[in-house]
Length: 536
Image (tube, rainbow, N blue to C red; front, side, top):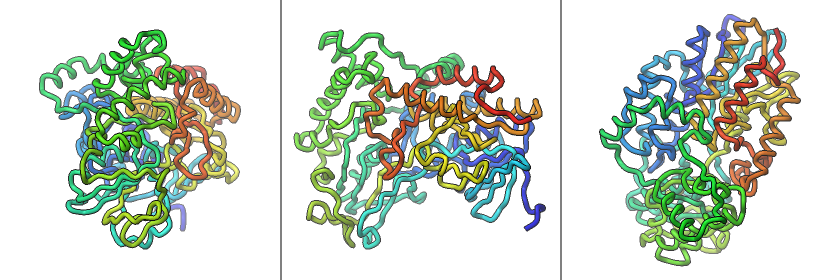
């Protein structure tokens, strides 16, 4: 195959979700030739794939949207406090159309390999459709929660019913009316889908390994006056969130929970419980994520609420987390989750007491008994933060793959670059605040920094930019050290890769928050990209 068959670009972006679309918009505005490769049939990223019943965001709609264009935020009107997947997907489609982004995206195209050449200072990419592309810059905008985790069980191939995964839900929808449904997993997607599946199914069996802490979302339609008032202050609100800790306006209380009386403690916990926000409870006192004793008070408060809602005390206890501090695994927001277990057609199976022995032709065998099922739903989440980055073959200098480089855990300078892989940018990669924040704020920060970096390289005639091993190791150690001051590493969560068998246990997100991270990144750029080796 000769070189005339190779498509040439300045930058190729992998992924057409929120980060990929904004990256395309920013780089195109610099006058660069940019192209996006997207495996799905349209824009949306994780919101294109995750169409399970009840799928919605756990960040409020006004905040879970782009802030880069004032006209865009005035033009679009959200209908609910927490947007559903169809509404979020419609919004992403609206953005793609408004900025004419689809013309530079190849859908149904998965990147298989990206190989760096020192000789040409370019990335050569191949796809599953047989295309070959070259570009100076390769931007991985693949998302933190986009590669489905599919556990294997004995006998899976024997099951004659239907097996689904919440992260790869059929786009035509699934009607489970009158069917016997099993759900494996009680993380966010399980907590969102279980109440709706229970309403349809003849019998719903939930297979739970570890219960999760979830708070009531208090979701509601947005009335026109609320929307108008918010739009009137949108610019000031956006500026505040860009310089906040979590990308939303939540103030961390200054007092320790251990210094107030029980009445004041419960008053604040009750207010947080009723606020319907993801960050309210853990922000109600200063030490809930630092002091185990303080944390246990918040955890017990939630367990007490579970006991009030769930009528069967045995089931309530099964649903009450006791093996990890609250907040060290991502908190969930729900609508009617705990109350669902009061339904006569819902059974909760504790996999610690009754582990899954095997799948059979007609169901699942646990603890020596068979539970007959027509449909099995894996609500088992994702290979978070690194799964989608390590799925293709990304081959850097000296033929080293990113998979080999990160075999003992990811190490990325500022979450965006790794030594040995010049001109490769990982948007909201490991070592950035990403999943501990409002993703849209973190995405915009990383995209804007990356675009400014590429613009600087172009203006200065630079050939390549690459994180130094010293800077990369220093940042990775800093991320680990900062996390160590908190309870986060004790949670055995997907933040650590603990949900994936054989995955190295490394705490991946940067817990110091959006504003501190933004300041660090801006300081690096202001000092001629300190910590990067630049070839001119």
